[in-house]
Image 1: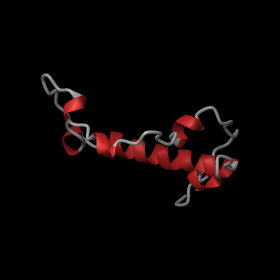
Image 2: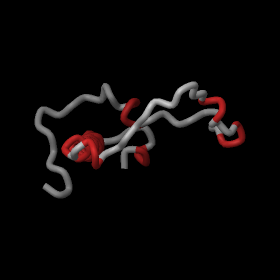
Image 3: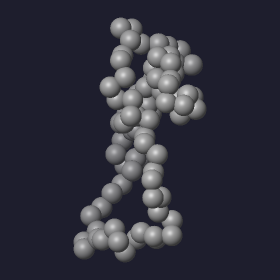
Image 4: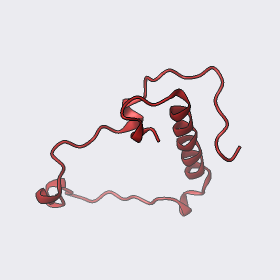
Length: 83
């Protein structure tokens, strides 16, 4: 919804996006580490070895959560679609 708003989302659309982000992050953080993502350090890792220049995007779109980070908050959050 926010992406399709053409750079001019309503306050409701932004609040709803933030609600979904909040639920997603809390879902990840509430799981035990063993059931979540695992990472490890790869010695001598170089991004250049993994990048396919034919698949890079010259002008990537700006992320909505970064672009809207300073969008004004409501005094009271909305209820998400599932209450």
